[in-house]
Length: 276
Image 1 (spheres, helix red, strand yellow):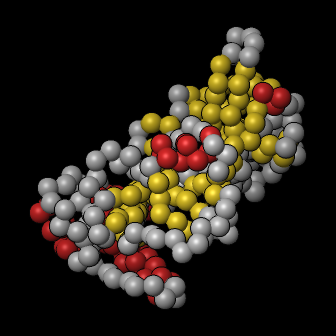
Image 2 (spheres, rainbow, N blue to C red):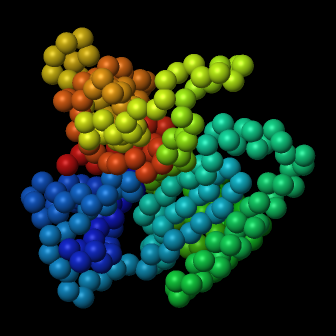
């Protein structure tokens, strides 16, 4: 299972902890939720001279999906992993349809990698790069399956000989954007078929926010967690891991995280943080 990131009260990074340990800190009031994705807690005290393990962030950029992983150099434990789907599905489909040759993907990846490398150099931290051949060699010799996040784990010569990947479930992140500047929908002839856009924020919520809704009565009784689509009338639609729930009144909704232009999913299941 991926570990939980921890900050002290001054927002200094500490060693990641097991989700069970994070729950204890939250339930005892010693910490609070700092960020939902990736799930991060912040302690309510300063930690003097903290000891942190030698963690290495490893990235395997791709044209469609980028794998990222944090590995403990000393133990080989994979602390955290994610797969980042960098483009909207409809945009990606249009780009691929326009591609004249598969070399365009390779050129895009190479340009992205070197630009990323130049930006990381500015941080002043130890930095290494590796080839695709080395990544494949590391993965094959360790008898690991082909996935984006495991490719990230196997990048470079720093890859530990023995890796601990048991129970690690990668966080899948997909870029969805922040909506559209189009003022209204058009029909096939180019004439407006809807009214102009209304208020972006309704009752303190805006489309794309992550909410938790506990409906206590009626036919929709239950608990729903997902992205909200607001309506000026005050009843919202919530997209959960199991589908879309319509006409949920705003009074049942509690904000979990503001819209950041991405959707999150833990493996093949809904990506909700450890229960506090």
